[in-house]
Length: 424
Image 1: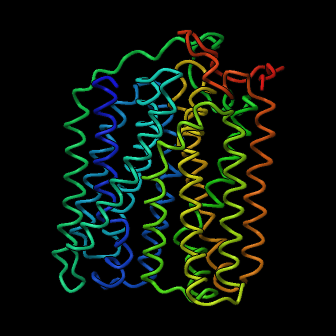
Image 2: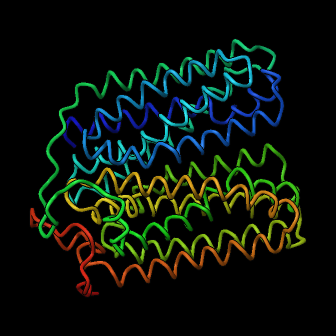
């Protein structure tokens, strides 16, 4: 890794560490500590999603025009102000405004950092770079949440103010770390159309990217959109899982990612990307079947607990397989100079899935247990189908980037009308 990539990874870890301090405790802080009630706390979580949906379409154009680094620095300052304001806010309106600023800044960080990784990597190092990013994000979130849990005291508002101040400090520290980064020019890639102003019409004309966005929506809806809503509600209501066991399950998810990430990478780097994603669908279908056994299998409580924790661990295995696969594929489908817009579009799809997922999965998981499991087993198998279908539209190098190793020039941009068939 060059100096720029090392700083980008440090930045990813710092931002995740700061978010880990506050995200698990946001609902408790607004509803109980500030005494603003469950309704306001729910609105705060909704504001995060709405702010992201509003700013992401503009973030892509800004990244294309200004470059990812200036956009990232502006987003970090806005997020820092939002975090600090959230720790000091005492009324419903001030909490909502602070949450909007934090949510908007946080949303723009994702595509900006992803574009910086694309610009600082080559085709044969990109998968490893995104795997490292995902590894450090989960490690930072886990450590931040662990330390934050020991600092908070629901009887003292000042303890939460300290948490949000630390989060703001992490964002500002990240500004200092990245302000001196010297970004290289994006590598010139063969077959890319002439660079021009980014447009949503051009993106929507890229059939492979549209299919990848549909696949991404299903991925995020069936996994991340259920973690803290439908699946947890199902575990409590159907499987009799305690809140402490939910924490253990989330820890098992993080531990699986940390342990498996680089071991899985060896397999992923030599396999077709779409077949790896298809395999993730199968793994997640097994995870949902394990959840079904936990709640519907009528076994002992110990077996139900083990099956439920295994569900989260299997989700972690699938996530470890996706991190070096999906994000680099988004980058390789983007025409030269438009990686920022493509990353923003995919982040927008992710936010939509994360907004819809809890709204659908929460009530379903809490009350209709068997239909909930069947629904998401089918969604997971849908991931497999959509991934294999996408594979027919990609070029050989887009689906198997290791074919281009040994050459400095690889194919990039929208898939051609008649994609080259990949060799086995």
